[in-house]
Image (cartoon, rainbow, N blue to C red; front, side, top):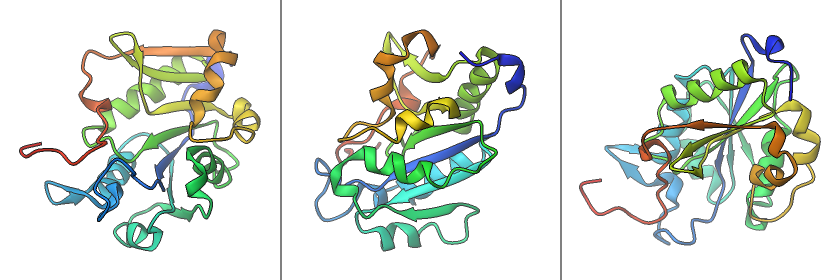
Length: 201
């Protein structure tokens, strides 16, 4: 594990993963552009990240990337296109890593399909990272690990070697001793949206 004293006020980059094909969602509309309460999922996730303690926000787009990027216009974020998005989430993780500020100590990988994620949840993970010095920080609800996942810079090299449709979780088995689980009392912030919800959501 890293030395917790060195992470009193960590600089963490948020990488929002918004490039996928959304195969289980409505084929007519990318999940990223689905609206809940008048906001697209990707826009809402971006603004939640901006309201948190994350220092830099990178949004990785791919499927219908121009449309997804357009709804983010005017936000203080960086939008980066993943041309290989069809090859799985690992490609978006690596594209996002390529844009992380040189001074960042860690990156948090945030799926864009968590409609109830809030800045407080993100901040708690950042604070747990600072307090624990863990190289991996992951939220847990009722014994199940959830997203978003925070990864210390010391593991970026390993992340660049992942493949397939799974992201940072590929590192978990190799770093159990460096992994910090943060227990939450509610599943709501981590409930993903795989299919169109039945109103009211």
